[in-house]
Length: 333
Image 1 (tube, one colour):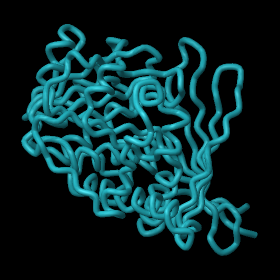
Image 2 (cartoon, helix red, strand yellow):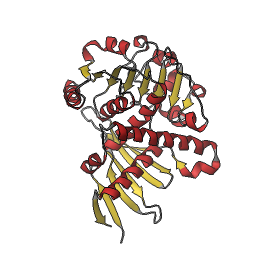
Image 3 (cartoon, one colour):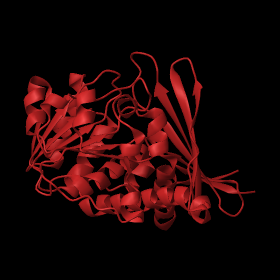
Image 4 (cartoon, one colour):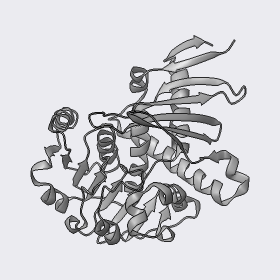
């Protein structure tokens, strides 16, 4: 008989230090290593087995689209299941990660992945921000007040502690106002406001913009962007979804992506308004030692649709921490 470790949402939150800049930067480092291994695996057949990320499979339900994402990174093999709402009135992204025992091949752990998905995605954006955003960035605008928006705010502050003003846009007032109040207590020295009342002006002042919505029509427009702004766009994951307009894509002088292959299939904005041969897969920055000369007048954009090796990376880390701290429930199976 084998045992399975069950990690609940509360267990995961205990293991995540969401406002600790040191821990968050370690997660950014982890995503940097993950992206490098992912890219290397595509370019070197000897490394391919170390970072496996097959295209995800989807199943349509009455109110959700269920996504199944298997992957392997180093010694961690996992399967993430995410349910994306397809009906009005449904919110949230219920997610679970199953981790396999590397020796036996059986299930070793089952963990709530709601927070993990947001954290690993935001850590990818944090890596791009570390590379390309103004080192003295002061103004941040975030579209979306859900888990992704919140995690992006924490990551942006961790990688650019110079940020002084955070403006949040969200369609729903209640969730936006709740997040603003929560952040004001966590970051008392920063100005945290609603962007809904004067969105265009807030974006025009922004040094960093993060779009974390499920919008099918653009919410961010290129005519609003100032020179030198860095964009992290993570919300869209289908060809028909467009968080930003065509002008935004065309004004970007550098487009970095988590995966050229995945974005060619799923990144609606990029597919419509740019060519994949002009994108930089972010793992190449370290794998091929590609440098991008920082020019404060250039607009840079990072597009992420999420690659499953990120889930193996974060779940492997969480499982290690859970064992070390004896957190979680052990169930005979």
